Length: 125
Image 1 (cartoon, one colour):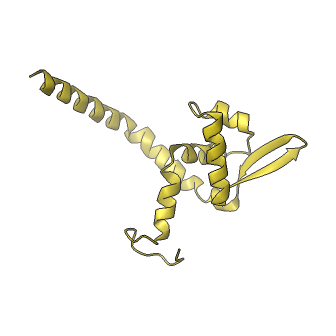
Image 2: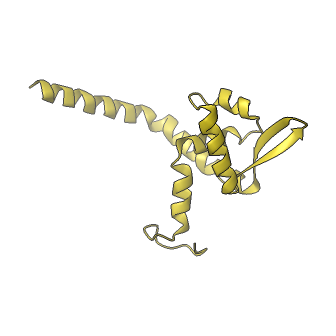
Image 3: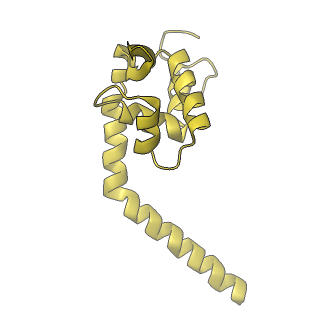
């Protein structure tokens, strides 16, 4: 992959890697969950509603492969996950997405409900 910025539509553009990372719904939640402090696997499971232990493990491994999360031994038999310096660079953009969701999430849900009602009404006619 080239280091130079290019068109986001080109296959070798670094932007595609960023999109690949954040398009995984669990990855964004894990990164945001680790943004405040290192956490153990079980703490992340408790924090992130709906994620299975298996999927969390896969997500953590993938984030480690990207260099965004590190697995470290805090004490014997105590493993924690923490953001790397590179991983911390994603906190601000993720906070931006979180703020957008808080500000506009209700409008998206309202739109979806209106679409579903319109489809339901059309199928009855």
